[in-house]
Image (cartoon, rainbow, N blue to C red):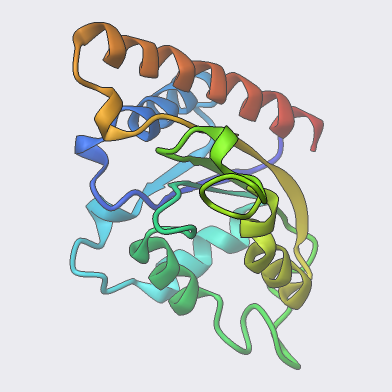
Length: 185
């Protein structure tokens, strides 16, 4: 498999079940992948731009792993993108460092998938919330390579050991779908 860089954008991975399980399973099944946990590295949001850009340069495939917060990535992942995807590095006259790299989105939502529709409570489909990532790929000349997502894994659905185990199982299945996608790239 190509060089895979997985950026975890959860703001508090220690409190997660779904995203934590996804990353643990990825670590077991794709030990050659580089996993970056932004909440552990940068709790102060002070991103080491040079170090993160070096990781991006080594990667063929970049996976953004995150829970959907308020219809977007969590603030720490947004900050990471703001800092590392700089003019002259990722875009602009000399900004071609991400050109040809593949971007995959891997995310979870608390709300059930049925709510993500024009008639549902969210008013938009999941795919419509991904437009900013597709536009980022267009600007940086990365290849948007799809998404894997799992809905309905909210904190509110973790009230018993059985429900926690159910979320873990759903998250392992998410990881299996993600690995299948990565193997096609």
